[in-house]
Image (cartoon, rainbow, N blue to C red; front, top):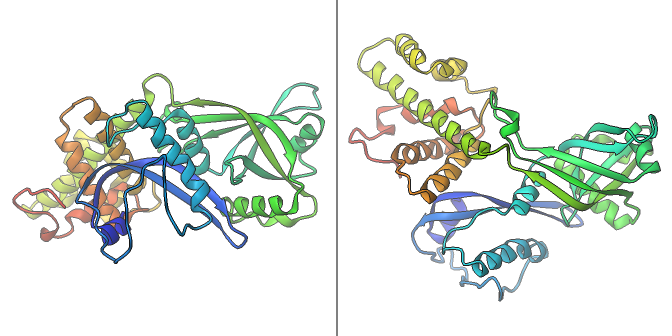
Length: 364
């Protein structure tokens, strides 16, 4: 977002994760995270004297193009074309389940591998595994020849991989999205493909020192079918509502702590009063009261993402949500310096009288 502002003069006000693509160069692995922008301010201008031009998804003409750009651009361009063919309103779009599934898998590196046991014969057997992705987004693994799941795969290559998105502390795991990839597992024998798989695996699992051990094989799940679940019933939307409440409550607590202290009240007493009405704040007392925002329970960046998704959801329903918009702006401002810290770092937005306008003006 910063680069778009600095190079094109466009301020993104709302975006959400869309597609993740991986490309393996001989010397490095590139993981590109696409975001779909649904709201912005300004018109694109070439601030660094580069050539810019609007492109149609069905007729992209770019030259020169980096090798990674060709394959990774095909997926979002195809998605845009499909949205237009379906008559999607301009500037709007939803994540198709297939893209949600791909993005979920690309955002994780651990899952549950299910194989068919040799002993007892035919019994499902589950293992926790780490994985990387090849250029087509298929999972690759480095498995020990001594592991039971490896012996199972030698006898029957059918397998599935279950991947679950991260669940915020205290949230119901069933409200999280999950995807099961079904297919067959085979060894990656081609040296170039193995080198690419190794690079992708290490990019996702930097501590995997065992990849070059003689008793470890590189294998790949050839995906034949996918089962994606976005959470039970309306759980995904309820999760956004719950996280909206968390964001608004946390921002209000930070504001009232600063305001009460400025009015001459003891900060401990103010926090005690706030906890009476919002008991969940007690879990973040170290952050709100002592500026200790690690270990992170719920990162600022993740709440900014969820509030952006929530705004998109509410606006599609024509709901008035000024508090949600203000909370998202506050956390986005905080993310500039505290992206990976816990959301209690919102207190930094009120660290000095200058940080918030006394007139109540919204942050830019």
